[in-house]
Image (cartoon, rainbow, N blue to C red):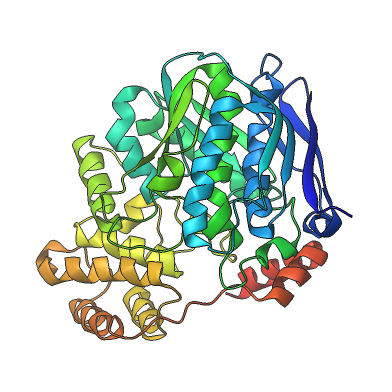
Length: 426
């Protein structure tokens, strides 16, 4: 059978607030969706006036990279003309990172492309509550940004408790009070089988391929209804580090649809500089914010305060004289010692290593007297020395194991129970 991915249609349910999609893979493309639920996207506004050429943008954005890396055509009944052209630019970027992609083997074929009308001039941003997001917020808040949070990205669709904590947290932040908060629910990481990840077996599909296109495209139906002309996505990295990643200026700034363009923000800033910006902005406002940075499987609160990402954020805050406890973290007497042990175990990837290098450089110029010490001064000095030593070691990047991906997909309930047990004893 001819291998291809075929989009059939989009339709609304739940009082016009949920987009449902019908699509299929044929031939060898069928395995990418076998046994998985169909993609959907659920909003808090009525989408009844949104044309199908816009409604299909979130789906096509998620299917396109699968088609490109699998080398199969993607057939679409209709699509916004500007977005269709944008996908061509994004594909060209992907082809540089993944030479196995052939422009001829994986065309996007739309029966009709539609020039949709521009609907307004408002600005919005994707808002997770983390360091990158808050840095972008403080840089552009005078634009009256709408803040869009997505359930199904870093927070799983089924994690009701963690999602509600995020919603309540953002609703209660005084510095966010003047900004509309919009929430989208989409099963962005659940609609494809583990065989998609095997298309790039040494990397993670969500981080290195999917998330930039997926998150930006989810905004499209909202942009049409609410009249956005610009949507910001905060940078993850800076130009100083060149790694394969699914959200870069080349990818994000190419994404647009009729009436709205995406802007990749903060690329010129190091992460440690973003932390300094947040500390400075909150001090000027005589207020604070709770940062939500933790993606640990074992986290059942705002931040676990015990993983690599929590540690580097806590240390970054302390290097600007800020108390991490006032930014959503829990300090322990053993915090510095735990950091030292983690650093001695090495870095999991080039991105992590680079962020710790930034911190190391800041530690060289920050006097201990100007640092909010998490423990005793001697431990801080030991960490500074150990960090310098470990940064000279090579990084061994590791991708997800195929057997783990298959087990999680086949036995999701058992995996959730396993995580609950681990949380209780961690």
